[in-house]
Length: 497
Image (cartoon, rainbow, N blue to C red; front, side, top):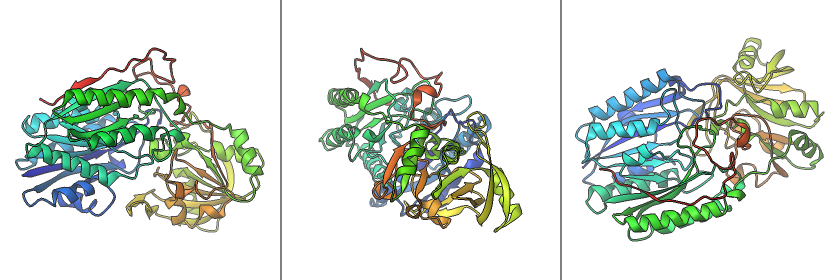
């Protein structure tokens, strides 16, 4: 059996004014695609572990485009380029009998609000109805009708913060093999839920959201269960089908799929109002940072989370600390290519004036004039401590502005762990205050050892205060943008072909 493998990964914040281009992707093809993922905690690696355990399976690696990090809406040119490359690679695949596709699910492009659905529909047309397609997705994916109509089954993550990348790929591979062996005929039930959720209750190990994921796991262990999960979407990807979704895939048992999807959806809705994050004002956050002794105060700037699609150039908390006369040592990441260029021109040890912040999202952030000393310069290539991958932040400068240590990068990079800090000689545990630009991190990264952990109500294109972002495209009503008192869950059935 020949199994085609392809990948397309990007998560978008449509409220980020800085567009994503083709240059923001790492593209690999053929054996280089597999080599770049093998042995790591990634979906394709998990799938390979299953496929390569079968002597009757031949893997056909085609095309992978993986964004360096999340970002703004994909440009028309970039989208057409990527779609053309992806689909041409599928066309050139030699007689596949099945296909595994790894996607994020929250892409958006100028002129195409459902890129994943488009690619899956085109794949169906190229491969034919007889070739089964199974897709793995981030639980922050936007699960559209087109995606469900053109995939035999979808397999979502079961953890947040995400740790189950490889095991999700393995689940998808096992499901695909069942279909190809004739042992499964998938039917999917999806229950749309008009809710956008954020906050600590989404931590699957400890929060309310974990209940629905455990229900999904129980279904997958049922003799007729194939896949199940909760998609909470990405509140910052403002597209027509933005919402949360309960989904259950069974082996030709539509009734079971509907009942279980409805049960998961009802349980989710019963607690949806809990799934908000209490936010602390900028002024109160600075006061807390000043008063906390000893230990480190973490100020969470999820509104500028690059891993959620933000621009990364927010200086809002930096400005609040400076204006609030914060005098202790603070560690601050920021995307500011002009500041980095100035530092490279001046060299290590130089004292230079730089405008800091607001290099990309000028509508939200006005640059701050700072006098800085250049402490370190690097090419911004470093190892991600979570999976050993090489991350590319572009030219990077470590800048000291009195008590503020600023790591300025030329391009956004994910900040859900300590990798950028440690790679540039800055151990967060040695600072009194650290700005963390990620809504959730694994506990050992910051939360388990910090003295205080404060979710800050700062401006930004990925703010948990979603009412103020300016949604204009998603279907309404949707909570919390609207008050909903009469939600009645309805299960919809999908079966490819």
